[in-house]
Image 1: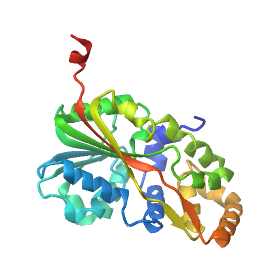
Image 2: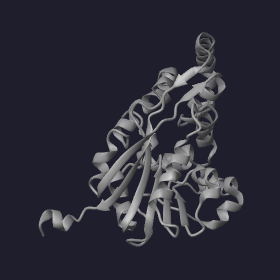
Image 3: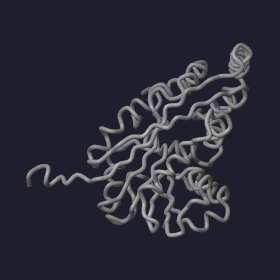
Image 4: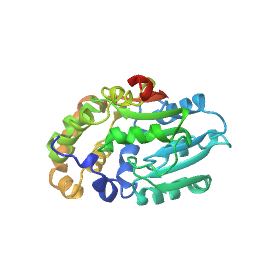
Length: 283
């Protein structure tokens, strides 16, 4: 992959996710222009309620802006003990402000997924929403997740497919910084197509559920904001240079069709049932 910033921990911590700003630009596109009322966020929480006891102890890795909790605040069981972590202290600070009073019932800590600072068998669930594709050493991170989960614990890991938002990739072709990354990084990291094999190294019971959720966008600016949010550096300068051309193309597409359809490919892996390696090897 030509650009590895999206799996570079230092870049993610200091630029892409040093605050919630860039992530928020992308979330707005998904929230404001969805073709269905059923969101992956609510779908994920439905599954958590289905699988977990009312007194579950949860760990979230890469907690981000906190939309999982904000959107489902009224449905959180009182008995849940929730530890939310992120690589970025700035992201955690922004989440606390975003969640307001809800943040008071959470425990927060800055954590790198490849070195989780909790004891073995500590959690009933680990939640990793759209973040494992950012981890450079996913095998180590998945092993760490397995270690801190209880024997009957569950991993909930959402991710995207390799064809996710392909229409946007075509639009972004004019911006090399974006197009080179988005076309290759999921295929090289943790996608709907390749995650099963990675999870099977630690879990024996895995299934994947796809979410049906696409986008219809009748204006250019949200797409430009999304593209800029994906840039590693100098996003505003690049948009100033090439934004007019991209905007003209978008406006023409919108005039012709009334809007721009973007197909999403997203889903969740639910992983349980740890392998007993000693039994497997016959030792």
